[in-house]
Picture: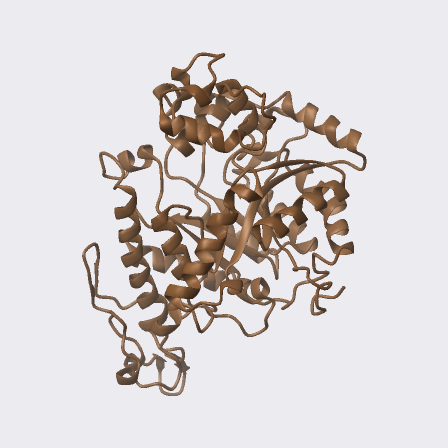
Length: 481
């Protein structure tokens, strides 16, 4: 099946990303101790270049890099469990590694998580446009509003803004970003006219003069239009405010849940809001689910790998991650205490979400939660043969209407090698994965949508109303408020 052939009847071409973080272990804390694991090399640029080359050869769409701006200090009211276990600690800055990976590749895309809460949009727009230039348009921004109080305390606040206010600020933030990316320069502003000595026409660059509740940004943008102007936009909101934000801005939504039934309603609601409120085609909003596959040529081989990996998982690290993700410190409960019967509504509902698809007579203690999270983190663990795991992925597509997967690793790089050698051939045989990039040397957005020339956000996307295109006079390209 070539990249431009239609997939088998009724089947989607899956979007496949690697899900990583600039740390050891990422979603599987403690696995850095495994003798085959190399994730502890995350401070070596060669480590990232090798990954990019390997995944591009296998035709992965992209590398999705998670990030946080603080440590996980809810569990035991201490950072020590995260420090000791290496649970997303230490953690280096992700954007700086992307140009090196891009220089060693030609097709694979790079998605990086950056928060709107703790950085001025003018500064971030400069950095994102720069990376879009350096990658030749193979860049995506995963928009987050941050969730750790430890980040707030280190970035000038005593605590986080409340949830809905973070999203209200993010909404204004996006307006500023669109004005800088799309409205400040006309497409053809850079002249490079050597005879006249004109690098850029001043008539084709303008201030944006944004004045809002949270930001005052006169502009103009420091960087000329990059290949995509606005990077491909990812988002992961599941709250009421998050869903409204995603419905307007996200081109791709990242979801993490332990079963498709858990996120099916959210996915459907976001697409409905996008259609009803923002006039978007819901099928153009792509949803990527977190999955950690553990693969073997036989079921026995896969189970042996699982049991081997389990020995190295850190339960303390898992409880540190759980505490950061949920704000719940499970240290306050006894070792044998059934968490679905405790007084706290937040604890009960959270644990019930985890336990929903487990046997009815199972007991959920903090140890159960830790074991559940210690391999694969906040997403499903799929253990089995390529056919079994592919069946599991197809169930997610069928039940939750997802469009692809962010594959996390248990052991680096073996988990990715197993996906490449065992799973991708099975997906190709089922008509679910391409043989090659749809647009060789194209932008991330072009390959994401499989459409040559689709470098910019689709015409229905809110960013489009901000675009100042070549040949249009400034008076006819008003900057939206």
